[in-house]
Length: 492
Image 1 (cartoon, rainbow, N blue to C red):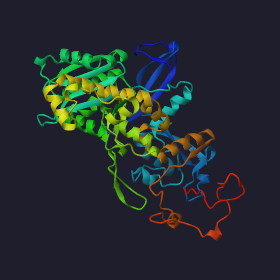
Image 2 (cartoon, helix red, strand yellow):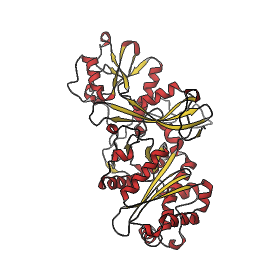
Image 3 (tube, helix red, strand yellow):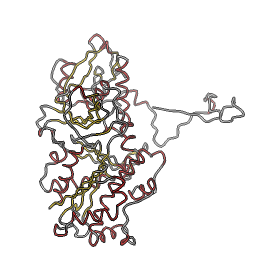
Image 4 (tube, one colour):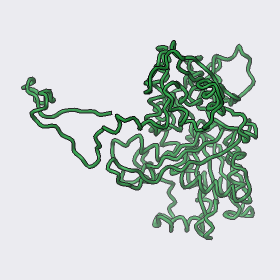
């Protein structure tokens, strides 16, 4: 894998090609234009590469409309041959109007995309522009692919002594680099927090510091919001592919609340500095709390089953390491515990940082004692929570390798949507054979034939034995011609 180096100015003759890691879509604040922000790697002929951000303003996505001579069907097709379609292009922010003009020769009367997409003559309009741009890179530079992404880890600690619950520590680790912001409400400047934290870090984590060559930067801030802003400023400079958190739904809402309370613009803090101000934004999408079973029963979701996503135009993509860990291993069943300490012990043989003086305590009592009487040890503890997740991912490769592979050509945010990822794959498959996949409308299940489908709710569906063909599984090795009554059936 090409070594990552610091970004620098290069000549075209030095460049081997470009690789796209991920793309974020941004609609201008006034809604009159849009922007795609791509995180790319510039691969050089000397075998090195460096991260870079690239902007695509008003990128035009393709869509196809059935030619008038072939508009002779009422139902949607799965795909259509390219020679029966007419190709159009449009920026995403005015896609609905462009489709309406191409299909009906007039602006859209109803601006709802799914309503317009009910037409059986629209093709290829569903595909995410972020996926299309990534595919553009892949097709232009098919041999440039880094087998492993870069992963940074974020963790916060909050006050449990004074009852404020404010952020007192926040750390971001990225390979050999670490930044820890210390709130003066936790350790006053008069206590020389930088010198004492450095000493304690080297005392409690000497082996980790040496093995990973840690270069730890301590920043002392006068407020929790200032701590958060300082860490994300460094994140934009380091440009990791992913920032992961173990149980992100604890850390991110607190960070968001803290920054908002102190008057920070979330779009300014989380967006890459290269992004023009009219496109900067931030949105936290909390995963659903419950699911509805096939029988209609509502069941609460385990915290590690909830899939949270963050939209912001940055060099990094946020991901919950705990949720990904569980989802990748869903076939193996539930773990006894999804706490970081339990998972670290299982995979790398060590848990969270141990402090002998408080070994007799656990839970909230442990945190209270640490914050009251062992503040510098607590700083080291916060740092190791990040390093521990890095060590875990280096062992499992969940984030660095497995997640990008499972996403394929689809946008990272669609990781949990199998139908969306299948349609994306079908789109590129059909394009290779000169066809285009159909576009999904709001009436996907409104066909009269759908009403005749037998409900699976609270039923075990069987067939009378005399109507069953003798093609059950052959299960007896010594009698290969004897068929059992075990059948395999798949309904999709």
